[in-house]
Image (cartoon, rainbow, N blue to C red; front, side):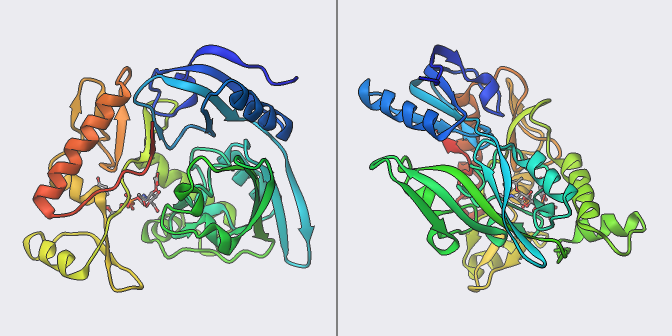
Length: 339
Ligand code: EPU
């Protein structure tokens, strides 16, 4: 038995909001064997098993009466390589940004736009993390997950993951699949994604005319660093709301009243609205009540100034949702998983 199970553990260090709730039991899984042990222990003691990665997409609103299992498995290997490409496999517990950096240092491109996203490799496919014109689905090869119902291993191809905007099959079958390792299709010859204006602009300002993936990564780290708070300094879970996709007619009605509306046409004719813009227009940017607030530089991010509870953060989120619905007729969906 290698799994160390502790009781009554504060989860403050294990969620980037820094919310202080307690877990009845807590353990860290370093191997597949640990994961199986945790599942067996939970079944034997009739406990729920709650799996967490980096805790960066999580809002905890109460003590957790379960065995909380933190994925801490490590390991990165190239499983296939031919002329220009490589398939790289990483264990679920690998921290995301260091993994991205390691790939770039090895000359492997594809993940640069996803630099500095908090969280772990195993959590990345869950909500198909994305930034600056690239989503995990664009570099995804396959993954191995454990079926918690049968104990069997299952491989998922790109199609089987049913990736969408911050969405995947794993989000819909909550509690069924436990992602153990993920494979990415990376390239030694870079095809850069510079569609996103601020990235191009930042490179231009630096006089970089022939950017490398490393240049793009540095530019993105700088842009993120300016707008998004570092969870080590100020508790947060990145974007708290998804950018809502609405019928074009609704977007037009809003634009008639608010000509500055930021909206992007979708392939299906609908419009994706910048939720941060809506929230800022509604006057919430920089709002603070107690220790729960809306980030002063990016209204899509809720922050914990110190000792906000999960419920205080949730109440703030609900007030924002109600206000945006009333003002604009738009439903804002929360991005983090709620417990
Ligand atoms: N905006 C405002 N006010 C604000 C925030 C944004 O007017 O307070 C406007 C900006 O001026 C810009 C537009 O809204 O015109 C979009 O803002 P930004 O480029 O910052 O991106 P975002 O829509 O706020 C999304 C992702 C981020 C990702 C960035 C960059 C979602 C929910 N969020 O944010 O992802 O880093 O694009 O690609 O899709 C995350 O999911 O945790 C996350 C940080």
